[in-house]
Image 1 (cartoon, one colour):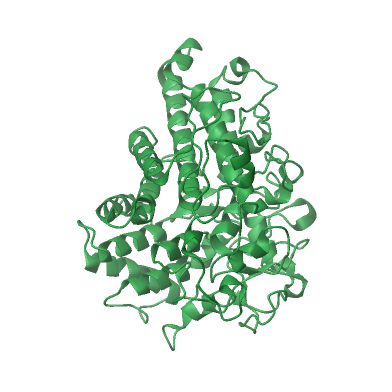
Image 2 (cartoon, one colour):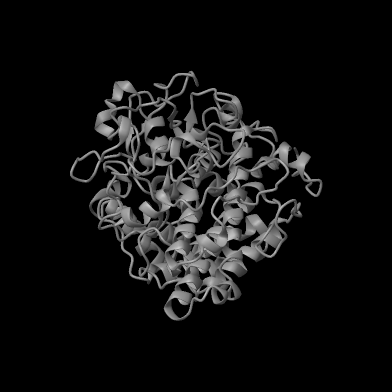
Length: 527
């Protein structure tokens, strides 16, 4: 099912977009004029596919190209950049590589010159840019002037709503990680326009208003093509946004009632937990999977990219682990593994086995950060199907595992946390039922069921359920544990026993290159 829309994403010829440049002149350039590209309904869908495809591809030619200047294409994929920024500064992952920017994450000493943070920042803004371009070409005036009427016109309006969601998602990323990025929409001038800086409060209100505005405009939940936005994706991002409102808006500005409202909408939309947890992260996770709400699609033939799940799988294994058994016979890069604190999360229930704990190795302690065999390796993602088949991939190193941006289990956890934090309209017994549903899948029985919970339990359970899915940094910040000296893990802050770091590191710096290019920008506090 994923292959149909994916073919459009990869082979679209109309979206040959330029690299980001230092002066923020991010107008996409194209050999095909807009009047040709948008002449037909299929043309609109092809350009929309590029907006989606910018999640999964570093550039128009897979591994050999990048939409971003100044970074190797293999590191320019959105998910690889986002995953590094969300996982490597936490107890869930540590990397042995010394590539520029990587050691800064676990040492928690990054600066505004970190090339990987700059690439993530530019990748998100680039995605905003191509969404803006699509939105300029899909106004009612443009649709009418090109002769579209009836269902075709309505379909284009639906495409437009989806592009607005993708833009809102990237603005959420920028708000969560960088707080105060530049801001531009389809209504701003094209070309040498220098975008003004926004702030978290204004950006929160904008993302919220966009999501609420498009909620009735996108396809109903579970009624769109696989890997395309529907109402449940909108509700999911709203629930996530509201759960973190006190981080974005300040203490006393919680929106836990709203988090309950929108997580409940998703929960009641007909999704269900996939019966086998490990099946969520296999190469056929696009088939018979009632849990995933919106994924990033990858394909070992059509999306040859050293980022995405190709990166997650290969970086977690090396040659001594038989890469072929992980569906990457030509792979195994030996980079990322866990700190001891991650497997320790799975020791809460003695005498039973949590099947979500998927680790390889015997040495949980990291005595030498440069040794891949120090620390347990995470084997949660495998490029094989549920029947053990390895999908085709030239060179044998590329993954066909889709990455879940949103899935039902997260909404269960949002509901439970928002109830415990005092949100109205929820019920603690209902929340316990959702948490027990996760536990019963994890253990295969009711042996680990709970009768009550607190917020510390929620943070630990989010770690068990959502580890290596690019949540942990945001979670630790919300629970005030990310920089704190009262909660440490091995090598936090660059020392073996771990240490607290400066509180300003809950926000990443605006890249130095953009500060130079855009005089309207002010650096985030502490950098």
